[in-house]
Image (cartoon, rainbow, N blue to C red; front, side):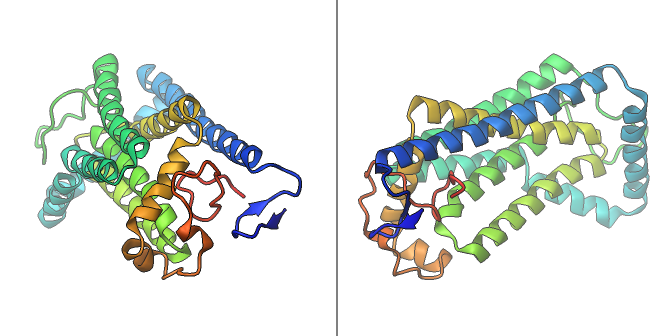
Amino acid sequence: MHLSTDGTRTDPGVPPGAEAESAVHRRTLRYAVVALSCAALLGLLLGLVTSHWGPLARLDQSWVNGLHHFARNHTAWTASMQTLTDIGGPLTMRVLLGLAAVWLWSVGARFLASWAAVLLLIGWLAGAAGKAAVGRPRPVFTDPVAQASESSFPSGHALAAAVTCAALVILVWPQANRAGRAAACTAAGLATFAVGWTRVALGVHWPTDVLAGWLTAGLVLGGITVVIELWRPGALARDVRRVNWRTRPRVQRVLAGGRAGDPDRNADPDSETDSEPDSDAFPDGQ
């Protein structure tokens, strides 16, 4: 493998179209593995929860009891948890992802915009369907510090936060340099964990509900991405290049550390070649 004259990596004797097709296949396989892994783990977790497996049930109960006792004795902690769970609630997360979809549509990245919008919709439907199908009761206390309605499994807060934060990282990824990507992943991971933690800390969810929300998010994200890649191979990567092209120089100059010398900055965003190894939001691992 070597660098071509336009700065992309190619194999000698391999047509650019074949290279692009191979990249699409790798991306599709990667997201299929994510979706199937999350589905398998979610199915296992659901089986353990519905069968009331003793060790897991005791772990759930001990966590919520301990955190509830702490919350009752530390009002400032409880208030901070309530504030954080309100800020990072499903409505906030869906608005953020919806705004991202609207912006992507406005710059002509129609497939990426549809991807974000479908993630928002399917994530909400998956959470509602899971609650209705499982019907798991929430933790019950004589002196609760917070209230929540509907069933408990999976956590809607955890699901919405995980879907939105992961999607935003994917959208930011091609714009950022290594430090920016590390910062984005760290911020997204902390936000996702914090929102999930508040649900257990406030005694309105079992820990396994939060874990189920994260696994459902992985299933939704991986599954929707695979469907779009199979429907329109390479369309998401082409939209990434279109966003890169439309948003330069302001966004890339700030987030990518001013990579003004990148040959691909002047590339045609509608090009059929899928050859941006460092800026593909759906990286091919090259």
